[in-house]
Length: 212
Ligand code: SF4
Ligand code: SF4
Image: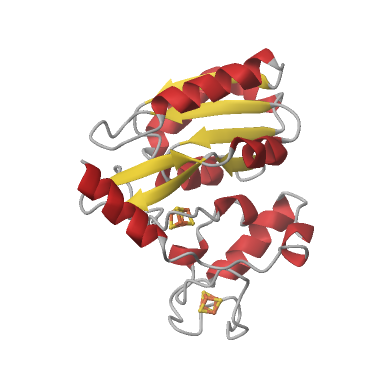
């Protein structure tokens, strides 16, 4: 299980830039999604003329279902600068994989509760870190795609694109670089401020559990 919380509205607005196509996932009903806050915020964006369309569905972490549902919104997605996703980290990664040539942004942070998460965590894993980094990595999770869970770029040990820890695995940071190159946003890596993992989010999870 997990809890998602909305990122700061200002940071989401800055990420979106122009217009956004919104995808909401209400799949895991036993999981907390900030449904009311998300709807209010989306209304504000729509009233400001910043939304090309909106899709609300269950389990966006099911790639086949996601492909099927988004096929009805081709024009709205093409007209958007960004796909803004309100879901856990698995859902955002599923969208980013399907729309690899489109900027995809996470509107939420994902916090851990023990148990179930989505339908395809084996394809796109999320460690529920409470501080989602996907907006700076082209929608590829640096915690689960990198053997050392590095958040500030690669360790330098990769050989021929493969991880120095697990030679069977493609280096997560090389995947991130390739994705950003495809998006024409590789400068994001050069300009990325040093990121510090906030391990206190573990405490936030405990507080949430205690308040249940
Ligand atoms: S950075 Fe990775 S682990 Fe953290 S919330 Fe995002 S997808 Fe999950
Ligand atoms: S080689 Fe790449 S994936 Fe492996 S630990 Fe280093 S940065 Fe992470």
